[in-house]
Image 1 (cartoon, one colour):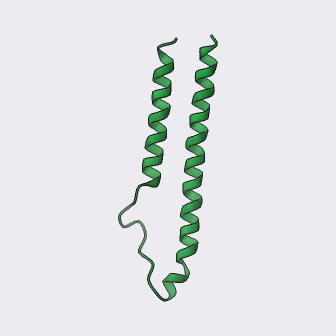
Image 2 (cartoon, rainbow, N blue to C red; image 1 turned 135 degrees about the horizontal axis):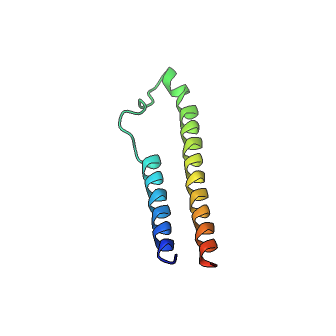
Length: 78
């Protein structure tokens, strides 16, 4: 099964790249720009929520990459 190992790593790397690109890319029209007045009071909490969401996505991508590494290391021993 040595031929499957590079394909598995390539798949994991591609999934990680797609997740990071989709999660970190700017989204047109996703949220209105903060303005002065009442809207500016909500801007920091919206930023915090987005940051937490991005951290979850990065953690999930890192976990998937680690799982792929473990899988690749496990199949290398066979």
